[in-house]
Image (cartoon, rainbow, N blue to C red; front, top):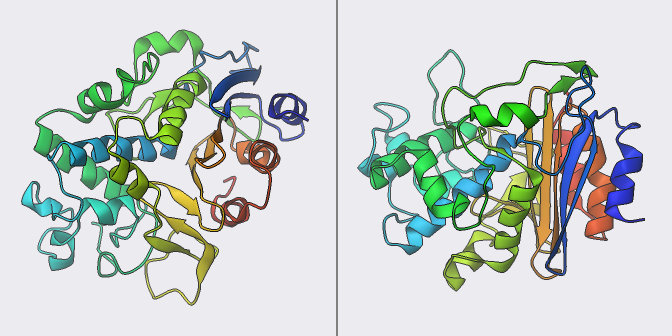
Length: 333
């Protein structure tokens, strides 16, 4: 069965109103759009429907950061407090956080903001704990170093050179005519409009555009060869059975799952991956440079990751420890 046929036959069983998918096999990009973008109006998803990418934003920001590294504007191991105030004031640990710590999720910062000020929970670089807060701090540093907004940087370094014409980290009113509405357990939610650009989650894009980015990841386009290899080189192993683990040294780590500079990695087979989750939205991307293949899946439902296992196995046959790890880490709530 092809991934396109599988997606068409699976969305109803997975309780997903609509999905858009880009598949790359041997360098060839194929698009598939199924279902509806709004289960109230019944308007169909097409290849230009704009979705929330959620945390699929993060690898794209990493791509821009690595271009800044290649241009000599940023060093991965230079403390970001040299450019902006630390994310935690009067914290020696926070002052030591680097871009490498944030991209590898080893900063010690929590995943999400709360009403309480954030803390650095462990010495940066010593262990893994997934952190969206870290990417917010990295965004501040990028903007200070370049003197440009995140959106301007992404246009210059990613969207324009890769011809991604329907992508923005800021909500654009022209997207309203063809946007996927989020759904929780089949109930339509209001579309989230990010109030400002956020490196951790706010990318608005199409599967067509993200497929162009995925193709650039597979080829290493716009990066020096050594930088491109480092992007997907494992830096640390993920925590066993959970993405966020702050309060103590984990009893066990995942032997087959690690993290590179903005990508999760399946260590035994060289695949890279990332997931996305916000209310009523689930997204997923996985690729393999040796196989010259990959898949990006956008859905407008909290149940969207039910589709990822079968599709990943069709596009990239074989065992996928990342799929099992994500099933433990990413809830439908």
